[in-house]
Length: 324
Ligand code: CUA
Image (tube, rainbow, N blue to C red; front, side, top):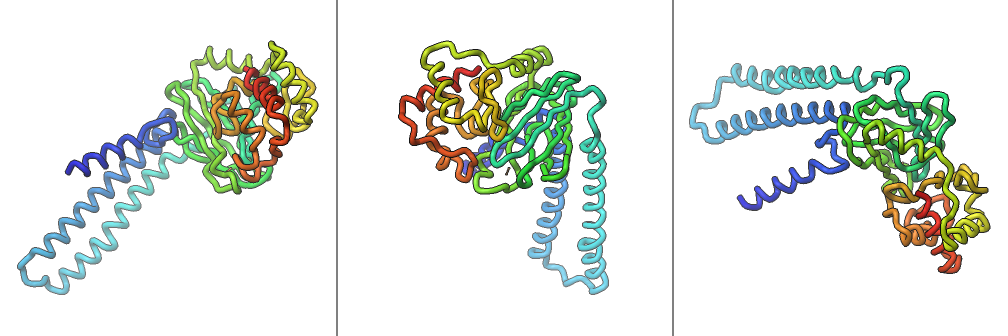
């Protein structure tokens, strides 16, 4: 009994957290959780009815039923009943679809999100402002529908933030859409839900749901160019970043680095994690990432720079971490 209670408690504990479809923080996830619980309830009732009939059959001392009655029971329990129950559940599930597929109203915030092997290219477009290129972290205002335009340049990825909405594939050559409608503030974890190559498991991101004013402040900061280095160590880091050619793949707006192959790093130090959710945003994690990219994320396009002197790696890491 104690083990059963423990198992139940463990199962329940697994239902909340920043990446749970059963602890909804968005309109889409709420509907999915509702469908899930109705399905669980219906299955549990059917299972109990089945158990009751089985137990009755095993322990019954009655004569075997007449053939005609038995046939009716099989027809009713094996064809009519499942058809009615499954049709009912299907109709109920499909009835929620139009809302999932609805477009965001005109004037809603629209964000382009591109799946890459293995990170997320994010681009904010709000009104007439020029686009703000970011990576691996999405901030959205609470209580407002936000439309994501999903695309991919390489293989099929799938965008999924279980706490906020369902998942939608990102297909090369096509644009798909997903409307997020967060209902509470918080930090949620998203992930790629379609196998997309060797490091598929290392392709996650954070969605930060904020009050409108905080969100505007965040976006204005992200749109601004990087602050110049404030210490000799970070100044040396920037110089090394440029001289080692990092800027041909990465942009740091406000410096000579203007590459577009890899993630924009203008405010990389302000993000909750680095390397698409793989490592914490800490100076030493930057150093490890730059030196051991190949072993931390097998198959990644970025070459490992483990051949650089340790002090150089430390300067570059200090500079990147300072890019708040
Ligand atoms: Cu991208 Cu899996």
